[in-house]
Length: 153
Image: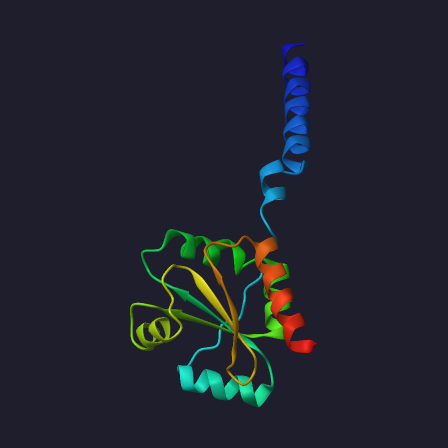
C-alpha cells in the first residue's frame, strides 16, 4: 500500500511540475523579442559613402564605455526584433565611441554633450535631428519612424 501511495504521489508531483514549467513566465512576456540591429563597420568616410551608394538614411549611436543608459540601449533597444527589423530595412546604422578615435571629432562636430545621443541623417549626410538619452524599444521605433517620414515626404 505504501508503494502504491508513493508511486501515486510521485506521478502527481511530476505532472504538477510539468504543468508549472509549461506555463508562460510573466517576466519573460515583458522582455522584447530578440533581434539585432546590424551596425555598419568602417570609418566615418566609408559610412557616408555607403549611405550615399545605397541611398539609405543613416543613424549614428554615439556612446561612451562608462554610460549606463548607453549599455541599456545596446542590451535592450538595439536587440528588440521590431527595432532591428525596422532599422535594418530602412537605415544604415552606425555606432561610435565619443571618447575614442573619430568618435571624438564627430561628437565635437555635432555638439554631442550627453550620452547616448543618436544622430539621424539623410543619405547625403545632412543632419535631420537627434535623440538624446535612453530610449526603450517602443520610443526608439517611433523616433526612427519620425525621421524616415521626414525623408520620404
